[in-house]
Image 1: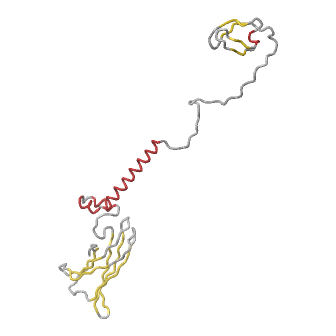
Image 2: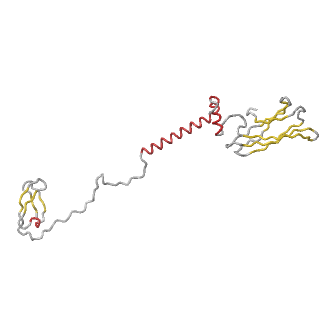
Length: 221
C-alpha cells in the first residue's frame, strides 16, 4: 500500500502487514511528522510489489578504492639515483684530471709521487718498477777483443709498464766514462711479473775499462 505524509506529501510503499490489524503510528523519514495510519480494510489481500531496481555497481570511496599502479620508483628515489650518478661522474672527471696533469701535481707537491707510483703513474724517473740484471763477458771474435753484455729486465710492480732504453757505460778505475751507448730492449709494454732479455756488445773495448754500468736511460736520450 502507499502511505502519504499529510505534512510534506512524501509517499512511501509500506507492507500493510506492518500496520497490523488496528493500524499504528508512523513517522515521516523526510520531515519527521508523525501520525496514526489506519490499517487497510483488506489487509489480507496480497500486494504486488514493484520490481526491484537493477543492481547498481558498487562504487567504492577513495579510501576504499585499490588501484594497481605501475612499479615506477618514486620521484625521490630517481632524484637520489641521479644525484649519485652525478657525484660518480664528477669523481671520475677529477681523477682523470689528476692523472693527466700528474707531472704538474708532482712538481707542486713532491710527496704525491708516491701515491701516483701506487697506481702505476708515478715518478717519471726511468725504470721505476723494473728490475735489471746484467752479465758482462769478455771474449775474442775473429781475433778482435769483444765485450758482450747479456741481461734481463723484469717488471716487479703490479701494473703494466713501458721498458725504457738502456744506457751502457764503460768506466775506468777512477769511475770515468770511457765509452757509452744505448740499447732498445723492446717496444712492447711489460706485464706485471713478466720479463724480457737483451743482448749487446762492443768490439775493441777501451783497454783502461775496468767496469761496466747498465742503467735505464732518460726518454730524451
